[in-house]
Length: 195
Image 1 (tube, rainbow, N blue to C red):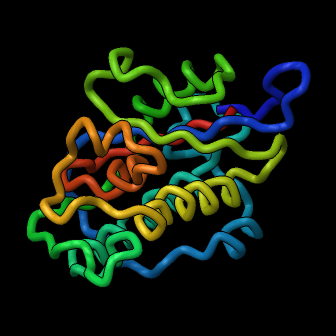
Image 2: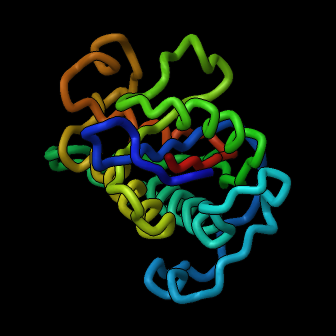
């Protein structure tokens, strides 16, 4: 992974997450981004990628952020937009694990310095979230902000009461599609790429 200036007049870089499926337990102590930023950086989880910018602390944080929020969602404690009702409870929400192979694939796209997510037909096996960050932002802070932005979509604009992902939902303005990537029942693997 690398954080670098994208384009002649850009001061932002892209952040991507990808998702697929597996099982683990998310009942561990919450990670604090500010405390993580103070720790020495390690790169053991995806050492084969030889990524000088991404680190294990950022990878662990994004998994922790997603699993904690998904746990609240499955308990039915997430407000559905500006409505007076919450999202329904879930029963089969799986926890997420980090996937270094997905990180490598996402990095290839991130290196293109695009200003939007990749086309669906270029990644038929996984979803994708996109978030732009300021050049040089610490990966841990970037992960924290991206997680907040994606999850925050549901509070601004909810999902229909039947929880149907249809063409209207996918195309409507301000649709919480990034939230649905984070909260999808069968999403269990993630990757992160900074560029």
